[in-house]
Image 1 (cartoon, rainbow, N blue to C red):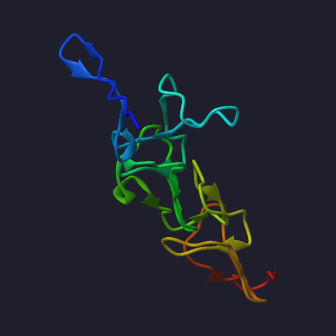
Image 2: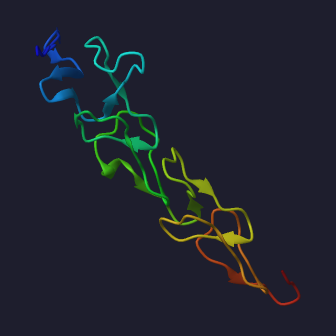
Image 3: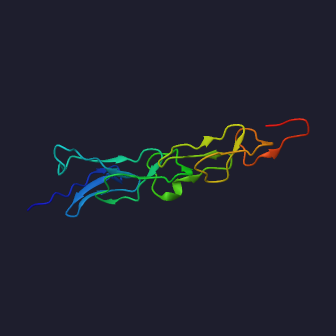
Length: 142
C-alpha cells in the first residue's frame, strides 16, 4: 500500500492540510473537508471552523467542537476552547455553537454564562440586558 504525503508551500506558510500515513492532518482552527464520493482523495482539504466552534487541529478532525451553552464565539478559525467567551450578565446562549450571546428582555435577567434568562419575581422588574431585578417603587407593580 502506498501513502501520499502532500505538502504545499505558499510563500513561507505550510498548507492547512497534509495527507500522511496516519490520515489527514489539519492545523488548529480547521477541520477535514470530506468528499463522500471518495474520502481518501488527496486533493481534499481542511476548511475553517465556523463561528461558535473551534478545533485544536490534528489527524482526521472531521468536525470542529461547538462552544458550550452560556458561551459564544463570533470568530472563525478558532484554535482553542478559550475562544468560547462567557456570556456577560444580562445575556445568554441557549444552544451549543452560538456565535453571539442574546440580550435578555425587560422583565428578565441573567448572570454570567447563562443559558436562559430568568423572569423577575412578582413585585420586581428589570430593564433589558439586566443582571438583577429590583423592587418596584411605591405605587407601581409588575
